[in-house]
Image 1 (tube, one colour):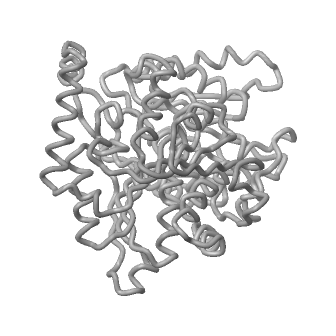
Image 2: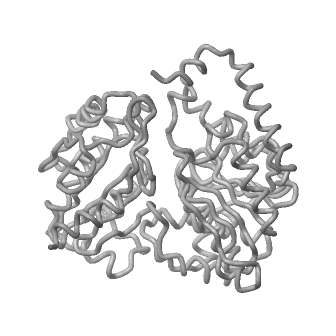
Length: 438
């Protein structure tokens, strides 16, 4: 029984809102309203937030600025280029909170630390749930960034429109600059909000695009072009040159749990993808079907498996969080059936829900894939996630690709009665590969 969830359900909305507002106010007051002494950049959207936060941070660090950042991946202050100017070495630690956007006191405490460390910028990953719970209140946000929008947290917000409206609130409080992905079909809603300055980006349209910026990313996934363009849009607004942006971005070789390459032969990649849109983008990156051209962002070593017509795409997937977003489970199954040659459905974060029920709902999506061209060759249901990963690695030949999605860099698996099990997809892959290769 989740007592907190029950209390939320029976408490009137206005009292909950007051409670959230009060805690946000007290947190800011306790730590001396630190955001007033920083330039705050908030990044929101469905996908790409963590990567965009990381890209922006790396550009500022390369420029010699001291910068703090919070994402679902980590907390970070400064960087090597900043420390070279005498600011002190970089400090970072994993986000172990199982919350992309931390609670109000944690954020304010971190911003206070950033002030003490003499940071100039702070980049925050801002979520719809965080906005709904006023975690962004009493943070003086200078720039708001919109990456993209697709269905997510629909049940929690009571519909896609409500979900989008929560994202829009970030732009309504941003003081100066709005950075917007104009390729996204929801851009029109963000463009309507007044701003002192607006910067648009897109692959071919927008003020910042691939025609007027040139860079060669070392990270997997053509969709990361959008994240890079968003980061460049922010940086140039604050006076960073395009040359510096290019230099910083081309140094980034990977982000924990985001298209993270753990092995080359077979190619094993761990990614956080847990929405249909995210999952399809990941699968398309590695599909060897002729209708899916290889993304230019793959370097020769990383692309060698996907170019082999005899290679298989082996997919390990679950569904993000028990008790939420049940609508997407068969959709994830449908996508896996479309792109993967072998599939292993497994546990992810069941919380208080029966994990086998979640797995069965994903499986139900396989029958919805009507086109015989996409029929799966083989799939298994393995509840134990470690065993599922182990099985996928055992199935893989050197020319195959194994894609493990859902948890990324998360350090916990959340199960019944509020229990958390220490977890790392990446470490498990490494451990199991060592056993196989002995």
